[in-house]
Length: 155
View 1: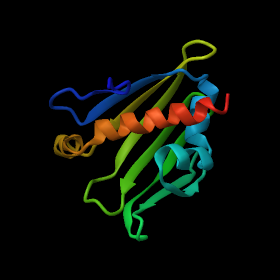
View 2 (view 1 turned 180 degrees about the horizontal axis):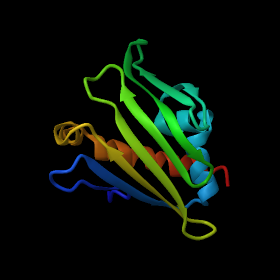
View 3 (view 1 turned 90 degrees about the horizontal axis):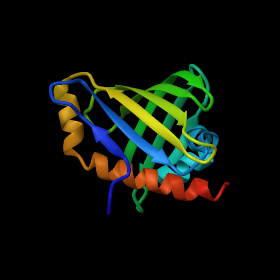
View 4 (view 1 turned 90 degrees about the vertical axis):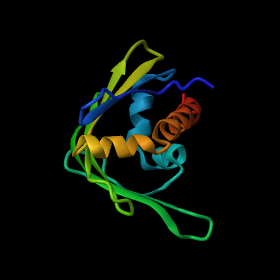
């Protein structure tokens, strides 16, 4: 299966760029990152907090069937322009990775299609390399596929 979500990670850099085109209007794509109920569905996680505004905070948590927390992440939203841009920090609580800075740009391609471009900046090249050793690309592609499937039903 082709991965529609593309990751560009150039050598010897602290950042990477993720791009994905969606068969969704930009307003619906943005809504998938803005509304807690939709985020919870496509990310498959519990949204503890999602303040979709400048200087808002967010916190997500995923538990296994026994209730043990297996993933917990949080951050602060530094910029929030509806249908255009979200700038936020991302920090995982239960994994020893430094916080990262994420720039999400939402672009209208046509009335029915849009593009998401994410630039993620890591503390070091080593931190980025360690992130890429995880099934990061596969997981992100699967999440974006779910996003498109779930949000398409809102059309």
